[in-house]
Structures are given as C-alpha cells and as structure tokens.
Length: 308
Length: 283
Ligand SMILES: Nc1ncnc2c1ncn2[C@@H]1O[C@H](COP(=O)(O)OP(=O)(O)O)[C@@H](O)[C@H]1O
Ligand SMILES: [Mg+2]
Image (cartoon, rainbow over all chains, first blue to last red; front, side):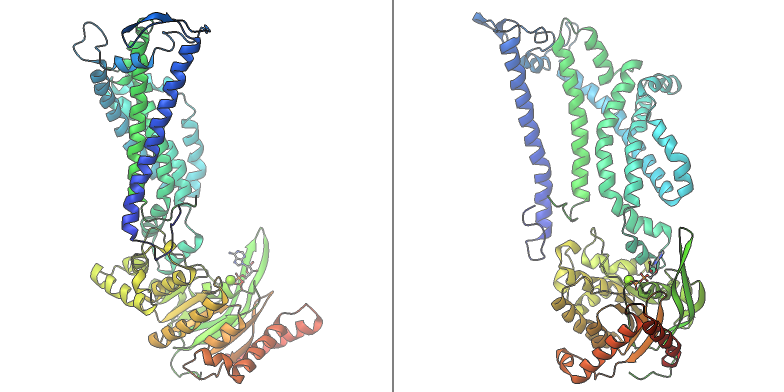
C-alpha cells in the first residue's frame, strides 16, 4: 500500500470501498490474463507439435497445416483445440440430449456446489468449535489434536463409499464429505488465531474482570478472523474437491462428479466434453473461493493492511 | 504532597513474590510495605528487573503474592479487580486493531454492561479529555504512538477508576513526545483526582510527575528510598528549570546508585541499609 496509514489521509470509509474493489478486480484481471496465456501456449504446442489442422472452428482450411514436429502428447484427443472445448459448452453432449453441455454443467455445478457449501458451513462451524475447545483446554488439545490430524490422512476415496452407504446417494453424503475436508484447516488456523492475542491484551481483559466468554467474543474471535479467513479460503476449494470426489466413485447422480465419470467414458470420441467439465469444476472452486475472499475483504476492512 | 488522613487507596503489607522457573526459584519482591493515599501520584523507579511491573501487577491482582496482603480501596485486591476499581495502562497501547478509537475506549464499558448511549457519551468525554476528538473514528494503526497511548489512557479512565496503574506508559516514546505526554498526564490527573501508581525508569519523568518517588533495588526487589517531591503545583515546562527540580533529580539518582551499582560490599550494605530504613518512610 502506498499511502496507507496516517490519520490525515482521506476518508477511511471511501478507502475501504476502494480496496474492496481493488482486492477483487486485480486478481480477476490477472486470472483472465493467465487463462489467455494458457490458451496461447496450448494452441502453440499444437501448432508446432500436434497433428495436421484441416479445419479451424469448423471452417475447412486449404491447404491443411502440417505441424513441423510430431509429438505424441499433442494430438486432438489429448489436447483438443481450445475452440472445440469452448464450443462444447454450446452443443448437446449427445444426440439424445435436448440441452447444451453448458446448461447441463451449470445444473451439475449448482448441485455440487450446494453439497459443498452446506458441507463448508458445517465444517467451518465444527472446525471453529473444536479450535475454541482446544484453546481453552490444554488437556483436550493434547488428547484430540493427533486424531484431528490422523483424520486427514484417511483417503477420502476410501471413506466416500462408506458414507454413501450410511446416508444415501444424495447431497447429504456430499455435504458430509465436504465438511470432513473443510473442518481441518479451520481447526488448525483457529487454534493459532484464537491464541494469537498479545498476552497484555488478555491481561487487560483480566483487569476488567472479564470472563472467558467475554474474552472469546471481544478479543480472541476478532483476533482470529484473519487466520480463519485464510483457512476458509483453503476450505472453500477443498470442499468443492471433496464434493466431486464424493460424487464420482459412488455415482451420485446430478453433480459434476457424475459428469466426470460419464465424459471420462466418452473421452476417446469427445475429449472436449471432459475438458469442459474440468473447467466447470475449476470454475465452481474459484467462484466459491472468490465468495469467501469478498467476505474476507468486507469483514476485515478497517484493519491494518499487512505491509507490502 | 502531604499525606491525607483518609484511608489509603493502596495498602501493601509484607509482600513477597517468588517466581519458579524450571524448578529454580527467584525472589522478585522481598518484603514490600507501601501505602498510597487518595489523590497521590506515586512513581516506582528502579533498575530493570527489580520487580516494578510485578508490584504493579500485584496491586491489580493480575498475579498473586507468595506472601503478604494487598488492599485496594479498603478491600482485597481481587475484590477490587472484580469491582473494576482501577484502570491499567501498559507500555504498549494494546489497542484492538479492528475497533476504532471510539470503540476501543468503549470496550471496558461494554464489558461492564453500560448501555449504548451512555457508553458513547462517556467515551467521547474521555476522548475529548485526551484531546483525540478528531480521531474517534480512526483505527489505532492510523495514529502515532503518542496518540495511541493517549487513547489507552482514555480507555483506562472511562470507567472512572479511583486508581490508575501505569507501567512505563511513555517508555516507547521519544523524549519530546514523552515530555508533552507528562504534562498532559498531570493535567488529566488534576482534572480527575485519580490516584496514580506510575512505573518508570526515567528519573526526570518520575520527579516531574510525582508526589512521591519510590526507589527500588534489584535482586531481590526491595524499596530502598521513598522521596517526597515538594515541587509546587500545577507543574509545567518551567518546573523543569527550578533548582529544587535538579536537587530532587540528583537525590533520586543518588538513591538509585545506592540501590544498584556493582555488587560491592559497600553497595550491598547501602542496599541493606536502605531496605531497613524504608519502613520509616512508609506509613
Ligand atoms: N511471569 C514470570 N515468570 C518468571 N519470572 C518472572 C515473571 N515475571 C517477572 N519475573 C521475574 O521477576 C523479576 C522482576 O520482573 P519485573 O517485575 O518485570 O521487573 P521490572 O518491571 O522492574 O523490569 C525479574 O527477575 C523477572 O525475570
Ligand atoms: Mg517492567
């Protein structure tokens, strides 16, 4: 930050609104830029080392372009053209389908995101509650944190089918598995954040004869917020991964996980459909991340910007 | 300042404080007796590690004594803390980043359960008193160190405590700012009539501010001298030019030397002597 600081510089509120916009627009532009670079590298690779180009976006070219090198990886199955992937969104995935792939993927994304978001909320609440308990009880922290860590070493692929067996082939299973991936970063960051206040701040609260509950609300939780948001951003993307991983092996219908399985089976005939699905998955994760990031900027406005 | 007849605000009797770290014990305070009357401004001065902060924290019941008793406002220190009888200011302002200055000053009132309107009114009164009126809506990090410390003083005073405990509140400020803050603190002290216990390691500061300067020695911490400061009030910049001011500064410096110095037989005797003499100076 250039002019962050001194009391005499501008209205704090106006600056906060500005930083909220800047906080989101900057990364968004960078993101689009990186996408463009990937597309260019992608097509350049095909131009130099792929298979002959007979048409571009459905329009025949004459004479066909013969790439100077032939590299096995760069063919139309492994790396379909960027425009074919984009085009896939606007075509039905199969002759029987009355909807475009894009419309179907939006439906699937909403289904998956709902499971992920519910799981995210549950996981965040559970994660924070655990952190609160651990910060107040050394004994429980010592006894239980190893289990919290061990819980994350269990492969989710192995857990998912069991959860589905118990709860059923629908979004509650997805939510539960998402919650399982969400709570961990929140607990770990929460322990650090809740313990982060200056000892003198706690002493100050003692001088007001403030109880634990008051100290938690007035000091520990506000101090933990930056830590928690860092964890929540990780959890937002992890919850989407969790949801997809929960759907895929168990074949829960309606979500992106199922779409991945389906288009994986059709990969040889239509690779662009799987690539489009992958993009949809990434988009859900990124949008969820941005949502949390926006909440972070709103919640933490007015705090000191970390020195840059 | 002469001692008034009224009951002491702080009454420290036979305080010993031991710390145990990794099984080895250190005696931080060794037999402290001290009584502080209403409206007094008492400074504790002594070499670093002599137990000034510990003594202040004992008065505030932020730690307990190994032996001895402390009464604040005629009740045990613990009771006084529950009754929010004192305000505390540390060397660092310890303001909360996420609160505006206003909201920081309101914090103690929130905890006590004072209503919103009353809270606003009293906080803005205190913010006016420390001359931060224009900065109520700013966040702490937007203020200079001196301004932050003034906000911390406003926060300590907002519950209208009978006693203000200050642990090197201006220790982190530059000399110029510190002198200005000293004058301001005296103005506030005179306006509020609060009793102040003030920890410092600056001799000029102690002399300029206090009605009494309590000199401590290190290892173990003892009161060696209690020096009454008979400079006229109200005090201002011209006070620092009085001959009596220089005499008192010298007297405090000599007292400190007697308590500290390299550990020779002589200085140990001086410390012993001072410690034995101290009860005469304290009621
Ligand atoms: N919490 C503590 N645990 C162990 N030793 C302590 C603690 N607080 C203070 N001490 C020791 O007590 C002595 C006095 O400390 P302190 O009151 O902070 O001195 P001062 O404020 O005069 O510099 C020092 O030797 C210090 O190491
Ligand atoms: Mg100290």
